[in-house]
Structure formats: structure tokens, C-alpha cells
Image (cartoon, rainbow, N blue to C red; front, top):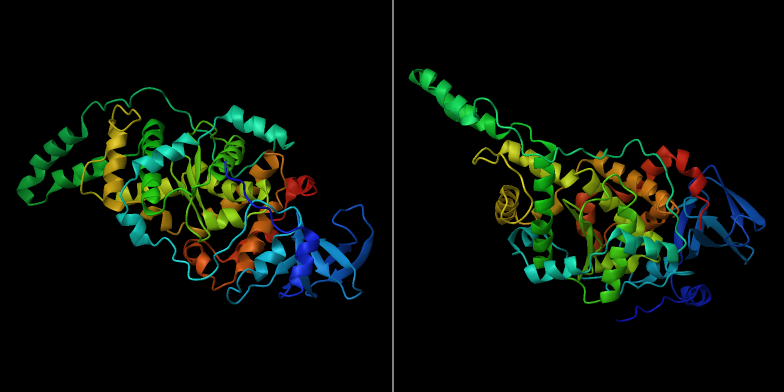
Length: 443
């Protein structure tokens, strides 16, 4: 198994940063206490007021090391200051500043000339069954994820989250047939009014196609769509050839997914080989993270924050709901589902295959409603707390993305499909931490 090189130590990083521009930031709270060391029980060395300009020399966990005028370093929490948007990418300079301390899972080495996955790539890419099978082969069960969590001293914590989708109840039975079939109703009424030159039969048959589906039908379609879409993403970009990364993303991801209202989904995670910074949540629990994003993350908790956001999209059925709305707007063929079973030979499986053959995986680059993105950020914070981690970690990840630059080639597709990073950070600040506040002191 190939090992992943560790990042520079904090001391080496600080020395190297003397040759690079430190990261500018401003105090974002009314006042921010600066500590002598990155812990709350160390002496306070200063209190900075809102809008004070500061320079970050390193990140250590959920603390930023500041260059203080007195010469000695000082430390603030990652949400005490706001990293200034870099106007354009500056090699690895900004990332070196934020990849210190306990960082060590990888590093971004490609920062320019990145060709992201375009919508045309995802629409035209064929399903890569070999890559899909490899992705599924890295899947872990809940017990393996729990064992990994125990090794990290993560303890599952019960935290209520009002905004989370409730676990749906499936009947376990095929949908009941109506007393009079939809087609018979359309045919009889159409024959009655056909002399008026109005194609009522066709219109009623169209209406029959969009009758609300049962939970069994929704779940079957959702789960069938997952591998069809994920397999086409893999057709555009294969899995990264790093077994340890694939194992790690599944262990961390499955542990976080176990803290949601839908732990029973076939949760499957992978890292695809592209330097852009992005992630994709296909319906039914199939989640792919780009190598560029994976290497940007300094810890398991930062990886968990990213995965938690994507996991929420699956829990809430965000992309599946977009597909379902497309179905309601497209009345060219009958997509009613009866006697639902899951699998490639099922009605739901055939529906998923037809959809993917027509649209590919382009749904992954469809912009969701901004509220859905904000909700997924909030959900990620709750999932982090439930998983025994610190909800502030998401804030640190968004700060890192900001440091990459507003014109970063590696973030091009992320900017197309997500709200601006400062808007996401603003929403977190406005929302506050409420019931999660007690967990924000975790290290």
C-alpha cells in the first residue's frame, strides 16, 4: 500500500513561509482573543478588534498562527478571522500557509492549467463498469467504520437536527393497482371527447405518468440511479491509483454516514484522479471526491467535513429530486413504476439506465438551490458533532478554498455549482452554532 507523504512540520513551514507571502486575513468577530499557544488554557497575549488586518503564517488544527508585531506568534480560532480571497492562484504559497501543524495526508501539487470535468465530459462519458466495480470493492460496512472511529477516539454523540430529512418508511409491498387503470381511464374519456378534436386521451395519459410515487418507488429509483451516474463520472475520470486513499475515504465517509437518518443506504466513496477541487454526490449514497480536494485536506476531520456536505445531498435526495422534476417536465415516455425491485433487471433499474444513457452524469454539474447548499453545510456541522469531531472543521475547509483564489482554475466547476465561499461562511456566522457550541472546543 503506497504511503502518503507528510507535510512540513509547523517549524519548517514557518521557516519556508518567510520566502512566501503570508496569508492576509481580517478579524471577523467583534473581538478576537489571541493566545500564546494553540489551546484555550494558554495565556492571552492580545485582543484584536473587528476588521483588524492580520497575517496568518500557519494553521495548526483549528487554530491559525498569526505574525504578531512583538515577534512572538499568537493563535486564534479559525472562525475568529476571515481569510482574504486571493485574486488569483499563487502556486502553492497560500496552501503552504494553511497546511502546517498536524497536516499530513497529502498536498496539492498542481495549481495551474487545470482542466476541470466539464458538463460535456459527464454527459458523453460511458459507464465504466470496471472502475465502478473497483469503487464498490472499497466499500466498508458500518462495523469496520466504527472500529476505525474507535482508533481515532471518535465517540458517536446524539445531537438533534431539525432540518434533517426524516427516515422514510417503506411499505415493503408492491404499489397497489388502482380500481380503474390510468390507461383505461384515459382511453374512455378520450373516446368520449374525441369528436371535439381535443386529444384528451393523450393528455390524461401524460398526467398518469406523473402521479406521485410511493416511497418504495422513490427509493428504488434513487438507489438504481447511483451506480449508473457514478459509473459515468468514473468514465470521465478514473479512480486515483492510491489504495490507502480509497480505503480512508470509505472508512471516514461510512462513519459519518452512520450518523445520519439514512444509514442503510449502500454508502460508497471514492477519490477520482483529477487535480481540480470538487466533489460529487450521486443519488443513493455514491460519493466521489477529486484528488485535488482530497490532497487539500489536512486531517480526517476535514475530510469528514467535505464528505458530510455531500452525504447531506444524498440524505435529502437533492440531485434525485432534480432528476424527478425533470421527469415531471418531460412527458415523452411512460415512467410509472409498478412492482418495484432494485437491480439492473428491475423496472427501476431500467428507468435509471435509460436516464443515464440520455443524460449521462451531467446532473452532477447542475446548480442546486442555494438553500440546499447552505442546508448541506449546516448538516455537515451536525454530522461532525455526531461523529465525535468539531463542527468548526467545515469553516476551516471553506477558508482553505478561499485561500486558493477567486480565479483558481482548480475551483472553476465548484464556483459554477455552489454559492460564493464568502456567502457560505457568512451563512454559518449568521446561523451561529447554537446546540453545537459545546462541541466547538473539541480538538
